[in-house]
Image (cartoon, rainbow, N blue to C red; front, side, top):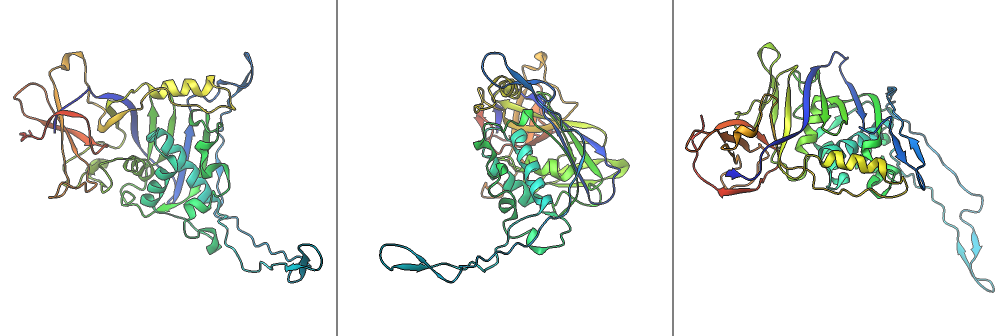
Amino acid sequence: MTGLEGTPQKYMRIVLNENNGAKGDFNFVFKGCNCGKEVKSGRFFSTEPIPTNDHPIDVAGDETFNFVFKGCNCGKEVKSGRFSSTEPIPTNDHPIDVAGDETGRILVQCATILGSIMDPGNNVVDYRERLLSNLRPRWLTTDPSAKPKNWTRRCVSGTFWEDPEQHSSYRVHNMSTNYRMKVQCASRLDNASTSNLSCEVRVNCGCTIVAPFPFVFEAITAIYGSSLGQTTAQQGNEGRIVLHDGMGLVQVGDVGKAFDLVAFGGDVDAYRTHAHSCRKTKINKHVMPKGEFPKGRALVRAEFTHGVTDALRDYGYVPTGDEYGQNTGSGNLLIFRKRPFGRYKIIGVCIDDWIQHKDGESRVTIQ
């Protein structure tokens, strides 16, 4: 597909860093861009400060306990109507497993925050299900009931985090967290060469995230409509991290260096606009996005630029689906050429499976 509409605009940067922690360390630090500022809290000009929770919290493995209660009338009869009608009082003696794992709850919270940053405007509950399913986190529990089936939902059932977007107080730009956990992942992106890496994410609104390498990159593949999902990562010579699509063609970053998320459509300033609304809207009212968030997204090396002198560039992407044209989760290759009739060059990998274009399918020569 060539002739992509729009021009690539950067809105998020990811920096790869060495993580010198012990094996299994899983640290998640998030600071919303509004932390330390004021949020409107009532009529006229009343405000209250937005706290910054930057003190690290060590998360325990599980906190389960057993609670059994039997009332003295269970199994007897209770009067249910006029005259002498009665009905039995049930005895609920069948044990019910309740997800009481602290690590599970915190992982769901962290995945929710990542979803609000990586994929704003879409269903954050569905997003975190995809993310945690791909991440496949594992941690030590002393009680098997602490991590039951469907733990991603049961850990937060009946709490604020079950469906946080229903609450007016859920404003990710006003939030901050700092958690330290002991978690290992069975994700395909977590291996011997990437387990000691962390990523620092910087959004153009000012929000920042520090999290393990597999958590951040699985967060990208979990974006709704993503062309990714079967990407592999390995560490080559001299600490070089290489991300391969299904054909092993795309390298997007080095340890200590960075790469960017760009968008061909939508409004890359929508993050800033929404963050401003999160401060200026009363805390008892829902904040609705006013603009369209970035779409037509891709990953490129940080050295990539597009300026006013690059108006003649032609961008496109090469689908990497199977022989039937189905998305294999390998990531479509982002390409461009500097001038008409020139050769195309691979510059990154698409996040969205489909990006608006005007020229359709055509044969291209890749340099």
